[in-house]
Image (cartoon, rainbow, N blue to C red; front, side, top):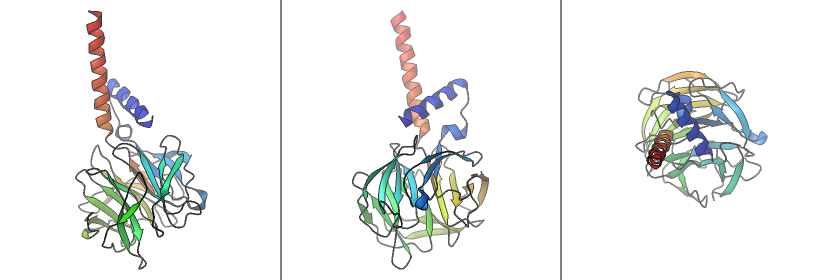
Length: 279
């Protein structure tokens, strides 16, 4: 239902001769929530403004991610009063969440979710007793988590894959961008950020442009949307989200251009058939 509505809007814009970047690649963000429960927002990728709040009913929502097929997932952490350490699906249109199940681990903390577009595997973060993080994969059907050996230093609060399957992690304690080996959990490179971010942060890659976006929040956050150059670590301000506690999760709808082209191709075929029937 949601994909169909986005596609119709995109097709209409294309037929009128223009598609804005914000419309071409819809962006969503979530608050961390705590006991007030997390809220889902539409985020304007051109201005940073977060609008249209929809309650998810999930408290302590640490991250969100769209699957390559267009399903939005969310993960709660160990502090959640109801359904801790659990995987959910979220309706992007209404914000309503549905519990899949607990992931089988009891120490999820602040982190994020990210789908590898090359394998469709969902990744998350798990907390070691030492305070370090481990990567994990999550089965989206059963919610069962599998921990990947190795640990990440600092406090990775955001994760995102690019189109090649490279995994980025945003460390908001050491203020670094990491590239991570998704099979071992080993840190491959570290790049210092040009500005300090808050303790909660979300990150995702625009599938249409390959641009890396970051939003932060909580009491020490700037409550702002940025683009991030993964080579230099330079954060470029897009604009304030307009939320007092910013955003803790960020997710682009996957490959909307593909959907548009499929829709346009179907529309062209239909027009051709109609002309043939008239003759």
